[in-house]
Length: 107
Image (cartoon, rainbow, N blue to C red):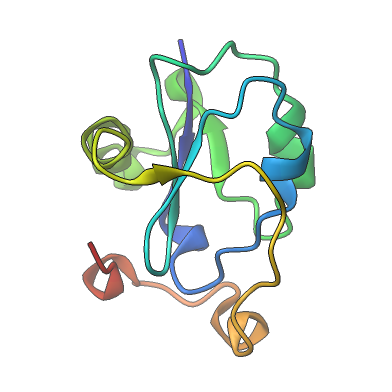
C-alpha cells in the first residue's frame, strides 16, 4: 500500500513532505506533487508534514478523492523526482482548503 497525494495539494504544493521522505518517492508537476507508488515504502513520515493534509494511505483516501490513487501512479511515471524542499507558490495560502480544485491540476 502506498501513500497518495490528493486534491488539497493542487496550487498549494508545499514541499515539506519531500524533506522527510527517506526514499525520494515524490514527483513534481507544475502545481501539484504526487507519490510514486512503486517507490513509496509506507513510512508515514510525509503525512504529518503536509500543512494542507493532502496525503493519505491508499486505503484511507476519502471516497471523493479516489481518482487521485490512479492519478499519482500515472503522473509519477512522467514527472521528475523532487528531493529537496522548495518554497511554495506565493499564493499557496490562498488556496488552502479551497474545493473543488481538481480541474486546476496542470499536467
